[in-house]
Length: 271
Image (cartoon, rainbow, N blue to C red; front, side, top):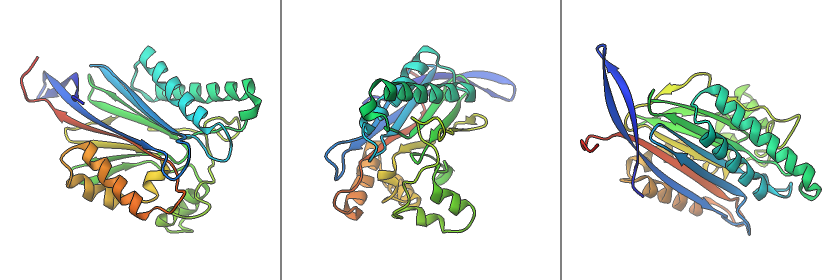
């Protein structure tokens, strides 16, 4: 696909000038070893603002695929109607997704236990900034200048133990209790989103990755970085990570999904 072009401004030595930024996007979503893919992802773009969303319907509750699709559609429709890139709006979008899933639970009691994770990235071209929010254990990463600059922290029991230094952070991968979440979309009591406190100024060559636990369980951050450096496109990067995942995963492994976003300054001079 052709890169998305966004227009913004930057100030250098007190002088304001227009910049045009290109955004490369790649998408991967597969059922893995399961019969049904309960992950969902999507994005909405314009010259001024863009939004990406990924959601993992929680297995074992029933209706996970419905919940994840509701999360993605609700957030994207809400952002398109009001494309503001700030913490208040991202929080409202996640709240709307939670309310929508709760309403659907009441409307269809047979799937009354459906839940989902959510991770959202929004970028504002005018201010060259990004903000994100998440619920559950789907993650957002940002790689900058060959290093991991941002990694969200899971809303899970194991993440809490890792934060308290009671287990090694690497123990989050492959642990049978890894999927015990402390926050999920589709819950009154256990819905506690985390949204970045302030926008991050973006740079050319920043790479963002939104992914479900079905990917990050098998591909750690150092592997992600090495494969990114060895890839000429984001789609190639996702394929490399998928190949690694399939070599490591056991039979019946989880769905896996990823949205990758790379920023670059457009120096073509085209209007």
